[in-house]
Amino acid sequence: MSKYKFLFIAIFALSISGQLLAQDEVSPERKQAIDSLALEKVKDLGKYISIIGNKDTPFSEANRVINRAMELFAEGAQMGVSSLNREEVKYYGAREYFERLMALNYDRVTIKWFNIQYISDLERQPDGRYVGVITIYQRFQGESDDGLKYMDTTKKDITIYVERKQTQIGGRVIGFWDVLLGDIRVTETTS
Image 1 (cartoon, rainbow, N blue to C red):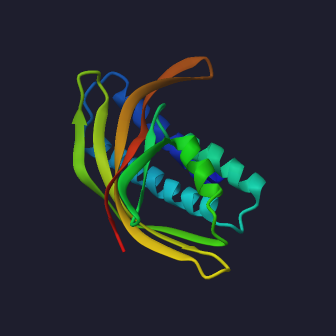
Image 2: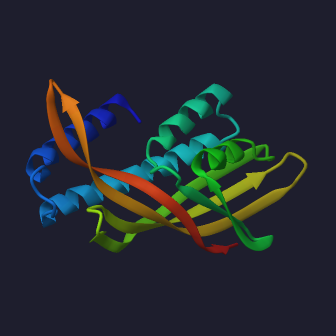
């Protein structure tokens, strides 16, 4: 994530924090801003996955991007992996998923996300968090120099958590809403 994008997100979080600090409910205007932040984080994850999976990405850069991607996730998040060659969907912790992606046995890997959209509205949970789901489609292509080719399109549902957090700035405690990504479930894999 660039310094400017991080600065924008920090300013955004601070701008909504003052209005949300004393509230448990999110106004429709703030909800729209939170939805935008959630979609932006999902798009960032798509970019990170593309970089990590790309065989031209240097090892040190891929590891740096993995660390950035991990910042997007709630603790314990699982990521689903499917294949046209098996019915079972396998789930891995986020870091293990990224490390496996980096180590795929192809000479060229291309991963693109498209048609990113909310499929469920944010709903308040008893613990005060809000939970929603964003759906994405992922196009995966892997090729080896010996002629091996694999390609699929996977529909995935990403759980989104919106929760209250606090930070200290200049000795003052500031409350704000943050968006974290949860489990990524495979719902469909096609050729």
